[in-house]
Length: 105
Image 1 (tube, rainbow, N blue to C red):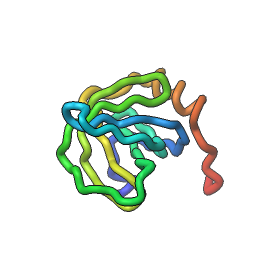
Image 2 (cartoon, one colour; image 1 turned 180 degrees about the horizontal axis):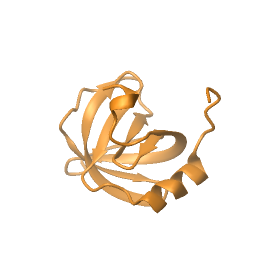
Image 3 (cartoon, one colour; image 1 turned 45 degrees about the horizontal axis):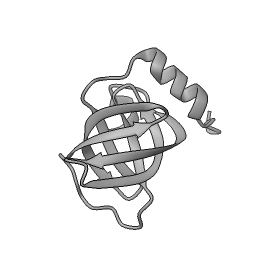
Image 4 (cartoon, rainbow, N blue to C red; image 1 turned 120 degrees about the vertical axis):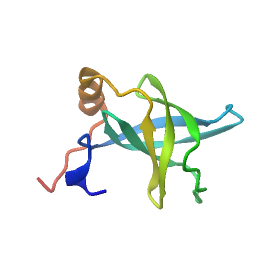
């Protein structure tokens, strides 16, 4: 899916986060590198990423705790879709606090 086809705009950010897999038997610390109304990109602080597409997760970052599922595994992290979309004002607050300026604009 290209950036033009995405349902929600993505915003680059840098926010420490934690993902709990399934029943919380496995917790991954890492970094949220993109945020959107409908999900995030999460880069675990691990060398290797396991393909965990379809796995339900709980995500804690920026003072939030949300539930979603891993929809993509890429070399730069996991794409996680939220079950319930963020509110616009919550996204604005995250981008304001953790956002990174895009020099390409």
